[in-house]
Every structure is written in C-alpha cells, then in structure tokens.
Length: 309
Image (cartoon, rainbow, N blue to C red):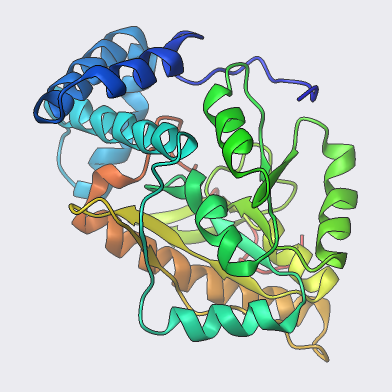
C-alpha cells in the first residue's frame, strides 16, 4: 500500500499490533481481561495527552465529572475493540446480529444492484462493518478513511478481507470524489465516517449531547449530487461476543426534489441518526472511542442545518 500517510498515529508503538496478537494467542482465556486492563493502563500513561478529550466526552454524555477510573475503562473498551479487529484479521470474525427490519431493508438495497452511501461512526466495531457486510452485499465495500502513520491493524484487515473491502484514502483528497463515483458506478457500497469533521468538506450543526455540535455532512451532499441512498449503522459488541447492528431507517433522496430539498430532508434524517446514537451512548458511554476533541458547539454565526453550504 503506497498511499501517503499523515503524521498522526494511532495509540501505541509501531510493534503494538504484533504484541497484542502475540499476547492474545498465548494468554489463557481466563486472564485475557486482566491483560487488556494492563494494556489500557499503560496506554493511559503513554497517551495521557488524550485524557482531557476522554474526560470532556464522558462528562458531556453522563452529565457528571469523569474519574480517572472511568477514563481507564474508556481505554479498556478501545483496546478490546482493537483486539476484536486483530482477531478478525486472523479469521476469528464475530457473528453479526441484525435488527428485525434490517434484513429486508438492506436486501432491497443489495438486490437493486445500485450503489449506496454507508455511514459509520467510531463506535464499537465500526472498522469491522465493511468486513461484516461485504459478504452480505456480495460486493467489496469501499471504506473512505484517513491513513495514519501506523495503520497496521487496517492493513491486516485488508490482507484478510481483501475480497470484501478496499480503502479509499482521504490523504489524497483530489482522488476521493473520482474514487467514490467509480465505486458507485459499479454498484459498490461506499462507507464514510460521519462523526469527525476535521477532514470533512461539508459540515453542519446538529443537536447532540446537550447542545448543537458540528458534524460532517458530506455524505448527504453526495446523496443530493448522485441521488444515492444513505444507510447508517452502529455495530456494538455484545457480552456473547457477537456484533449487534443498530440501523436507523435508510434515507432515500427523492429523484424529483431539488438539491436544497434533499439536503433539508437529509438534515432531518441525520438528526434522527444522532438521536439514536445518543440513546446508545447514554446507556453505554464507553462504546464511542472518542479520544479527540469533542465536536465543537455551534457559534452565533452558524447557518441552520441543511442550508446548502
């Protein structure tokens, strides 16, 4: 993979994935949680510059001051998520549990032979969604992602699930729109992250965690431009090891609507998605791996959502 990398890095040293895989192979199952707790504690010390971001998020979602124990628990869940990704890359893929209405909705999209825009968040098993849904769609899912300096976990997934997923790196933004159009023309799903706005070309403000915050809105601009449906899902690990999908209703742009009308309808749809996500986070705040600054609140000069920027 020769695409350019950003200077940003995931937590941990370059050999971190190898170390986790080795530890996961040799650690007796009764002790695996203890090992993850220890790794999370080390990560808390090494990546302590991320503690304020975790604290700010946890306080926003719980409404109470966050203790260092809660932040440590937040790190634990992130490490468990990394372990699940690395296990999947070794062939130990979690079972997918779909809600009752999802099979029919997603089968309709699959059987149409048309491409769709698939939105994800840094929640639970988000990085595995393409691997889990690729076989369902019988086509490779193209995942639009930022390639960081140490993306060994991502490259392992590609090595294992190359027939089901590929990546379009936003490190080269000039290639992204062409790559999206090309994949959609082949009827392939495109997966875009919808929570971090730093590399988003279009943003809007939405009600979330007690105030209006800025989120990427590019996926709906693409929907208005290309008239493709938007499906957003959250994959949350369960106690039995399965990955449970939460799927808000699919957004289908009206073929006869104007661009602004599609954007306004998309804004209403995305607000419903965020309401669903907030409900999940209120029940389990540790499932959103939010170790970057929380989405910024609205300024006095911000335009209404769906205003067509």
